[in-house]
Amino acid sequence: MGQSAGIPLTDCYAAVDIGASSGRVVVGYLEDGLIRLEEVHRFDNRQVRLNGHDCWDLDLLGTELLRGLARCREAGFAPKTVGIDTWGVDFVLLDADDNLVGDAVAYRDARTNGMYEVADAIMAPEELYRHCGLQRQPFNTIYQLLALQREHPEQLEAAATFLMIPDYLNFLLTGQKAVEYTNASTTGLLNAETGAWDETVMAAFAIPRRLFPNVTHAGASLGPVLPEVAEAIGYEPRVVLPATHDTGSAYLAVPACELPAVFLSSGTWSLLGVENRSPICAEPAYRANFTNEGGYHFRYRFLKNIMGLWMIQSIRRELNGIAYVVDEKAIRKGRLHQYMRVEGLGHEVDFPDLIKAADEAEAAGVTASIVNVNDDRFLAPDSMIEEICAACDESGQSVPQTLGELMLCVYESLVSCYRDAVDELASLAGHDYASINIVGGGCRDGHLNRRTAEACGIPVYAGPVEGTALGNLAVQMLADGVFPHLKAVRAAIAESFEVTKVEP
Image (cartoon, rainbow, N blue to C red; front, side, top):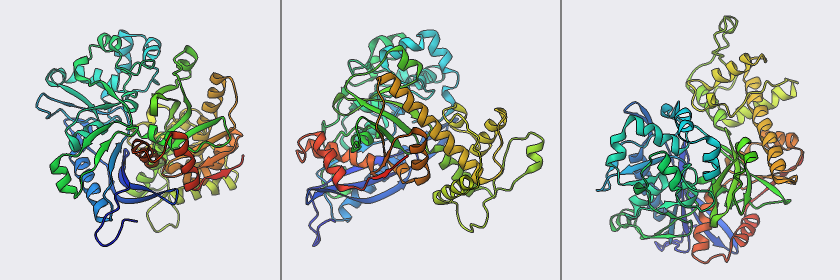
């Protein structure tokens, strides 16, 4: 904890970790050789509807960023450095006076609908993959920029600088404009081999290279915060670039057990893969739709993006937003809006309730229907429950009639996708894997961990929960000389935090 008597602890570091639904500020420090964490601030992240699009509320993020850093001081800390990580692909444009041009449109917005066809007419997708090695997903930055070209070409004309979301937040703190490598690798514009912007791709897609600062790597310092920021938060930290893509940070924190190991960062997205020293951009990897995202010190995260806990989070939001009843007539008429009733809870539905429902359905011998969790229909449906039920009906499977059946369908669909991805990894690598190492919030889901171990037939090591914040802090500690190398940080993480083994 922070020191008393008004003297703040300065041998510490602040990780600002912002996901699609929430953010937090976590202080980390070393005590008796162990890494200690203290969360000092948590806040909601939200999307707002602006000019016909779903957008990030940048004013909210800027306000909460400063509030969280100020609360470090209130909690008795004055971190030496601050690092920010967020999700990937999304960006802002600044004009020559550093004012925002347009809105920060969110990746689940529908503006990229139809952009595959536009892009494929310019460059064959397998050729784009050979250049950039990025998994084909409708929200990749390259498709967002194509959509912007068509809707608002004047914004690209007026822009002077392209920054990704964590880069923009760093700019607010320091006035420095830098695009960090791990997040840049999610754009579809970065050459997988060189780690620099791919000018051949940019020219083909008429994306102005002049907007893009040269890529900067994790561990670099952007210098101290601006004087007005220091005054607002009560101390003057330097800003250090972690792996600003949250998955890049999460992979750093995996204390790999039973090598060779598969890594799984489990949150809104499930990012399942391995850490390589070189990219794999060959045709089999393209066909399997694996991605080569940037990692710390020019490592590559060779992985598959899987829909993850987004489906479960969406179901929970629906159940807490509407009083659901089973509408048998609607089912018989083929109206595929399936309403679920939660029996006897008397409180808001939380994740343990959903896990319990799945456990009970499994114990009752329910045979789960299975949907393709990576289908674009699940990216941003009006009703996740309706969309799952519709997918079951259209494929000739049983439509879930209870919450337990619905949850079992989601869990079985997820672990089926995990199993397929592990099999594909083994095929591409030419060898089997000995374990799956799960970090992030999803590692607390005992049902999912157990079913993953059973489906994949190898042990699951669950933990640490705070994977992303730990990876963020690890880079700051490495930059400050607290640890000599990454192997030492991972050893400290394994010693400092609980990891639970789940046998198949």
